[in-house]
Length: 137
Length: 387
Image: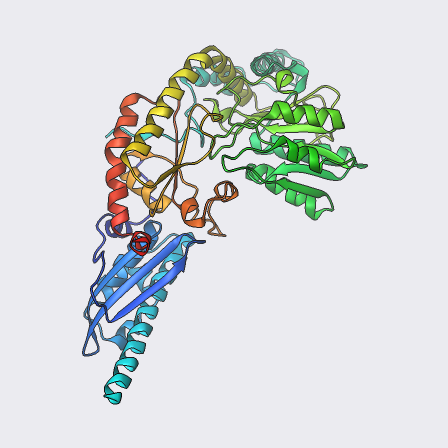
């Protein structure tokens, strides 16, 4: 019998089977919502930020194995990082941390990067609003 | 753990008796059917016997069967063969849910100046014969509509289409890759002029198929070469493949009635259980005009590939219309043509049962599938946004 062949690396399958940080977050400091129904991947990423450090991250994903694994991995990478450090994280960082992705699935890691950037953008815009509110007071 | 294979529409394991029939033709009986000495004549005899077996299965004459490398070649050859042989006509009618082998051949011809009408289907995947009647012109050379759809299992009203085609003097081709060997197919009863078949969907080997060409049908040869297959297709015959195909059709004919009954029961058991045990499920394809082995459902809020991977972890092999690795990333053109939203199309799951599927296999699917769906729904952002 041939060895059981898998489309994905062991690391990807581990994150797919046991995704880290799945779920909703109450009052997140930043929310990223990316993807669209046409391509079949939709990702939501929530972050909690304390003094410029990401203290918690959660995700919800509708998508393939690679989409779920990259979402899970990106949450694991960013927890404990500063916002500036998190902005340095690229889709390649995520894919490499997963031991690589099949070429046709690299777009899923791009989605994870986009979700992260979008969550940080949201955090920044909330910060600004918060500050302007304080000033008005 | 035993692997449960529920993707018989993708391919089937080769029947042990088929393998047995093929084996001598790799070694002892290795001749080229074109050679006049005994080795060659043995091989020729084997090819002709297989041709008779294939012809018998579909009620055709032996000389109307041309062996090809598979269903895709049969489709290409039928459509291009008719298009190029009838230069005074330049219009082709087909549907939006055809196999890529038909759609891509038609779009290729479209780029070469042919006009192609892609007919829509209703919510169950049926082509309306009235639509065909409406678009047919004196420039139409061919109607190509599949017998049954590979994804959703819907069986088309080919007989009615054939009547329309015949009255208009237009050839009718049908891709019968999913029906030959599974349900009764008789070329005269259906009234088709061209019909594509593939061996590996009926427990034969891969790399061999056939095109039925009704006597008198005008089409250009599809492979220029040494005059094999009555000048229709040059190339030394794939003797072991052809012998295997022949044997597979013989077995299919012998077991068909019982298999239809058995597989329909398993199919309905699975459909019923899924609809009962999981909420937010839609059955794709026609409820009754459907292949005995096809189950296709869309399960709200969960993506197809993630379900497949989870099933694979439980040693269950199935299929989906979600296409995250395809270059377009778009979901199945068939499901979208039914009017499904993109999310629903990406949420599809296809199980196709076969000769070696048992009731225990279906029970096993129902043991694990609801659990998988619950788990994936818990991480789905779609479910939350709907609340």
